[in-house]
Length: 155
Figure 1: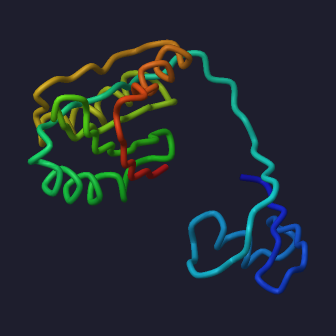
Figure 2: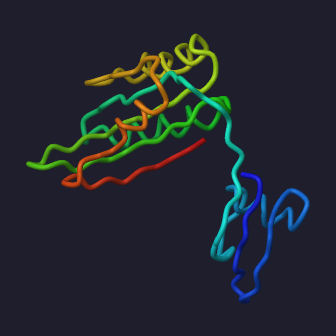
Figure 3: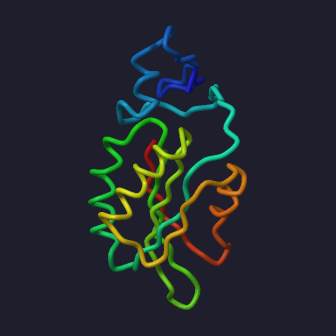
């Protein structure tokens, strides 16, 4: 994140960045809570990424509490190259599951080591991780319209 335009609770428009309103900028990036305002515009810095190491690991719905607790500890110390989330899915016909999603945008071997360490600690029922084009990974995230999802993210 490079900057935010925010309508404050008092109704003013503020541009928050590293140089302007740095405390608000830090809070909007996840360093604070409360009623910070309504973000009307964001400026992001993009990085060229052609391929990543990642995918989804699927667990039973009943494992959600354990998966979320362990994932929270694991992702808190993860390198910046990792983006991860947990999705709790309620599928058609009562088929529910807990999914840990991961995407490593650094060197593939380093990503494999980080994500395989998770897989060893929490062996999934179904696991699909590997090197792939970034666009292909994004396509796997398009949950069906019949599925309700709650996602917890980090990174």
